[in-house]
Image (tube, rainbow, N blue to C red; front, side):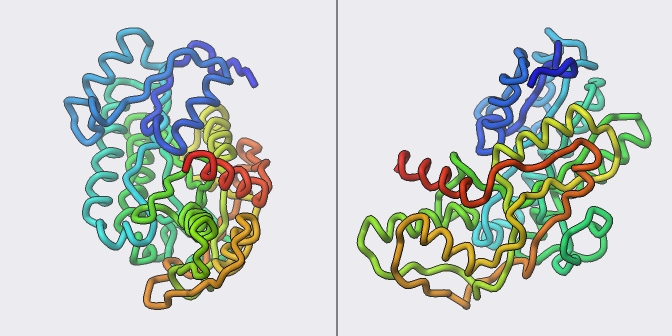
Length: 320
């Protein structure tokens, strides 16, 4: 997996201790990258200019700026419930983290900046499958609009800094992520870990009912976290363009009812599923088009959805 691109690179991975970031860091090590900086929130608040300056001072003390790659995988987000409760916090934190980090990286002459956006940036009623050219053709789904728009500004900022300063900033849009190490806190988790936890705990506690939000008719597609990390590193290595690029999964468009039934089968939960229709569905339909990533840097997700779910369930079972 070694590549000349990574030789002598110093890679900064924000969010490198998180769900996606940890996998990115592991795969960077596999590619032979020896100099990796993972800023931790306890000592480097990405919202603070002085903290970012200190971090870049440290990185550039041992590396040429042109050899530095920043992968901005940090985010403050969560599922529908968390977005409904904290839209201002998610907007402020994500906007400031991205804006200040990209600005400082450009000011220091960093060689490349990889922004990890969100599928929540797409319009609520974007045509299926979501194509990058439709990104601005409508307002995002209301429950996650604040988060989605804050992350979307990294695309605007990256294109503006490219136009004015020649800064090599790229923007990627992974679809819904899942996998081992995900956030299983029911107050903040996304749908896959939430349903896994509910089914596993119901089976363990011999409860006969699991309650799931919404009508069950909303659809999503899913990208295994290892595949997402591979796609991000392929883009970092091979893509230098201004246009946004989707990272799609290989599961197709799956309804919530289909997802819950599949997870129920894989977790051996045989009880009743109750749909709480007083809770929001979120975006009605979601599936992204992955053709641009295939054409530009040959990204093709490898992990079968059912196998990925099994691996996620096994991880949860071993850690809880």
